[in-house]
Length: 426
Image 1 (cartoon, one colour):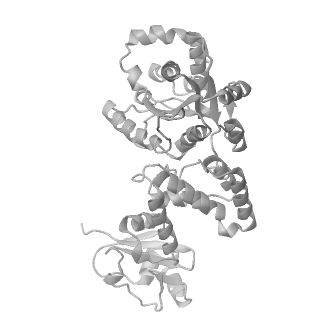
Image 2 (cartoon, helix red, strand yellow; image 1 turned 90 degrees about the horizontal axis):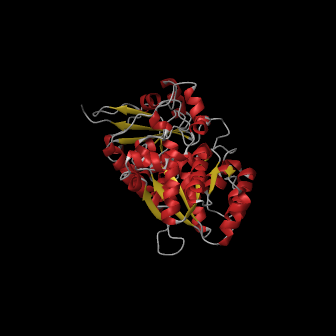
Image 3 (spheres, one colour; image 1 turned 135 degrees about the horizontal axis):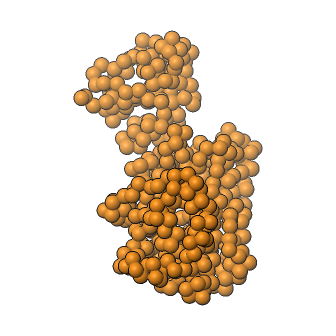
């Protein structure tokens, strides 16, 4: 076993811990069972969740046994942590469907076998569902002093603003019961999570002490922020980057990492990459010495896209990224990948029939501010259609130029790419 805490500290992945020295001794004594929970509040996990999934994976690789918990019960309630208003409750059928999807997503990152470190997946609905309200209040509720619950920052903030229902007020009891049940069923001694979960985690530690007289620990990771102040894992428009390829295409996922700010890439490598400390140091140095090559971003993008979407999908994404900028053959790209790539660049839609001129398309796509600017780009030799230089201001694409019968790729200079899609007839 390796010293996982030293590795997490080097990666700046430790925000809070109940007792680091005691935890270190426990981890050194043999395989420790730990868990992290993921509530199904959407049909997919997102980039922020990936930090916790990979933390479980790091513990497993260091010789410990991870449990991935999907909140089949808590997902019906919704964690009020970090929320300024009451959540909209989803139906049982919807949550059950999301549980299955998220179960599969978490499972991809852990190793399941019969060894002492073999991972386990559970749903907290298994023990919460059969319990009556009276049992819950008698066996769990009596261990939670109301004055202590009212002193929680999440509760105080909500009571001072929009208020909080008893449903969300009781969420901490449910999560604490999860830790207690996993302690009883699997000998689980450690819960991990984001730093916004600290109160929920320590409440579980306290419940285990009160009910079983046992010792358990909590460890949180910092909430990840970006150098420009924007939220990690969000697009410029505030949309979420999901792990599900149907919600965020592998191409868009890859581009997220490629476009990482130079000020963020070392942090991202430490938090997400499974490269050694030395390899990460070399990549960071290469990025400093030759920033235009974006070597650390490219290495991280390839590693993360492979980890989440697989090597074959990553190869298609890299081929598309190169082809769009004139370094590959556009005709070799499959339609799904090309469509996903063009969704990330300025794009114009045109109806079926005769195609507009290249000048019109450059202006309509936004690659040029006007038709006169488009003409200048062509005259100066800086306009391309499907990676072929446009020679004439009067050039008009032919239907045979359409990739997969519906797409054109425009480029202005080396770096500015746009697209055209022929839309279906209404």
